Figure 1 (tube, each protein chain N blue to C red):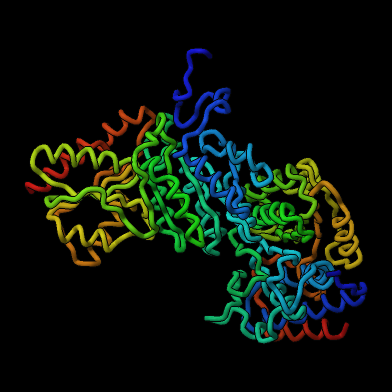
Figure 2 (cartoon, rainbow over the protein chains, first blue to last red):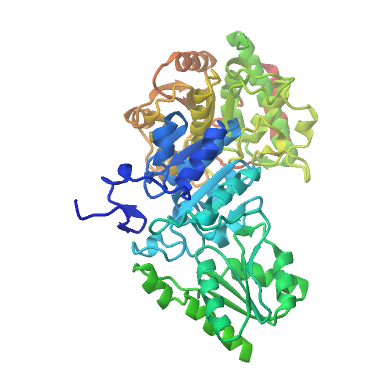
Length: 330
Length: 275
């Protein structure tokens, strides 16, 4: 095993023999959750076999009396999390994005959303970020969770916003879907942290010619696109819409009215996600910029490297640049 | 707080009162969960008048015993029980399934905190009970968690996830009662999916189990006593109930929803009031 480094992984999994030796970054979800749990005894952690790829092994090892390994049974995990929340706990339930949303939709609807309980669904492997295949690719999870009354939906842009996302989920007295990605490699711990207020978008750079609303890993792509366009004299506003529900409709409408072109960018289907939320907000407000949606175009994908899939399914900074340019000249 | 100490005949009288309510409530809406309500009246009486530690003046009492009705449709007998126990106002009976009232066909928590979870989407109640039992145990509370499942509901896969879980966590503060009335929408449960042996299946999953005549109050109370004394395992009581129990001309008729004419309601009440 000497040649293996801790950064090698496939689909969120690393060599299980190594992960106990690895110190999680201060910007990891695992550290953020542990810190909150150390400060609040109501926080409990439920897992469905995936302590390593959901970074919950720190919690397991340090607060074992509040850690509950349910095994590979997500439906039961969601119900049990709801039962715990009914007794007064704040229950964080973990799995991959697909398995805490689509697989357990009715359980989430009836046992967490309808009673508005403190069940925080923490999902990993958003969108196309896995070579494991279509079974593990969550392209409809935002749409599904957004459609549930009482449910909040948060997708941080990356390690710089994970702790704020966990904090925001605790600030809401009710069910939350946290859509996250384990950092690829060691995050830059000196980069500025990003805040996250539920219901508020965050403007990352300002321009006049176009606006890009992005979430999750597409925030980084949007920023790269803005750099590229700036070099060609096109100034672009970029907003991080990490709070997908409640959604900052006011910001979306304001940007739509102050920019001739508006593009959304998400690592998710264009059906029901950030693009849809934005389109709904704009239509209801009567705002009509030239509008485009970067995202998975209502198709299933396949297992491959993230870079390959982003290229094939149109999720790169270049795709944003092309879309925006086409809209400017349309 | 101690449990109620009703005698067996007193509990039987309570069950009789529940049956009268069930007939009146279903007669008023003309079609409803009549056969299940009559069949489970003894079970509800044994639980709510004997077993469960509840406070009429404080339904949210954190140390209460929990009881989840996973088969959320058996509400005529459930609402009648809560009224007779003093946990709901008597007016609830007149508002059963009335538009705008909280007393829906499937019990929701609009009724109040004694609907411990909104079920009705079958197979979910036992998982919630597992979570409650885990959390109560972690907090050092001696509250017990009861959950009533229908036998048809056992066909839901999630029940078996939760059963594995309860056994694995050795949740001895959890007791499940299966209302084995042999009835589901499609007909006799065994003709839809072969169910037996139910108790042995759960024993293989780490549970203690006992089959009783679900219309025999002594057996029900004895089984609840035995369950409460069990250590290290969740407990199952398979309550073999007779659809329509207590009204001879309805007994044994398997009908998920039963129409009740005014005339038949009168006949049924005459029988129940003559006891």
